Image (cartoon, rainbow, N blue to C red; front, side, top):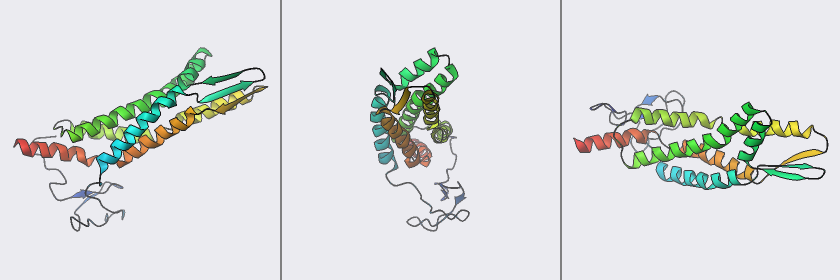
Length: 213
């Protein structure tokens, strides 16, 4: 943050979390509603850090069985094979479907882990009152929020794979227990991104700046 820069909170303004319009609240206790979209205004989300930490920790716990337990169980007339996410990536790669393997690897392994690390970093930076890099951390949060809407991409990939396998005679595929944990990771990380108040990034920076001054 630029030294001496005035934040919206310091100027007595509040941003709408729906349309991002800056407006002056009716009162500090009752900010009122956004004049553009009509959404209720909040100076800051109550217990944002606590709720986000709880959701991030829960998602991190679910992330382990999501990758350890099988997500698909393929059955033939004589055999039954259970595949984890990584096992499915290896199978797709060795069978020649490397673009599909890359999509599953990124969407199922790298993206959820990256979101957990990014949210953890943002929470720690706010709690520690990190002074610099407010713009960069805000961009990071917006990226996490944007990626969240693509979090179910690999579910469509898995559905497509299952449909292909079902076309083969005497073979079927059923979802494994890992799917439930993976779905929990997706939902929890999306909720964590929603409960985190990005305005706290700027609050922490301005607070440290005022203490230094």
